[in-house]
Amino acid sequence: MTTTLVNASCAGELTQALHAFISHLDERRYDELLAAFAPQGRWLRQGRWLEGRDAILQALQARPAGMRVRHVMSNAWAWHGEGGVVHQEAYMTAFRQLEGEAVASLFRINRVTSVWRRRGEGWELLEQQLIPDLEFGA
Image (cartoon, rainbow, N blue to C red; front, side, top):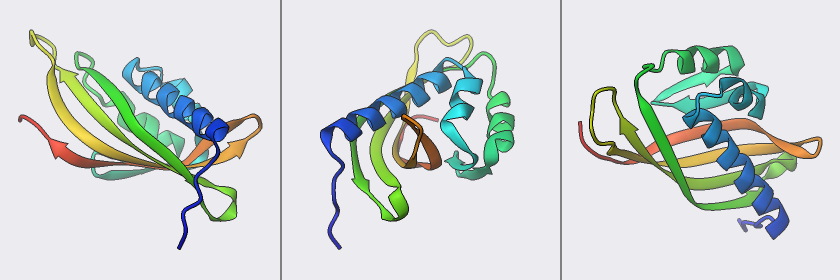
């Protein structure tokens, strides 16, 4: 099977969409994050499938209020899939600081796989998987 990479313009759009998604997560802008998903979008987060926007919102609202997390995205690339979807893979390095801690700690590196489809002038997430690749600390 041959992988056909997307063109540079499409790759740039998808990278921007992924960065915006992660920025919304870090800043707890959940309405914007949810809008990136198709209504029945799926998200594999912390080893659990979240099906649809309501389930995703419920999980996000359970995040500890005093915890700060920052995600750094890298190594993104994308290729055409069947049925007009585009697959994207990237790495996400997560740093976490719990309330009362003086220093943030390197938490985890995840492989992020996303399935996108065109929605108007932009993109929507059909599915995203956050798969731990390397874990650090307790």
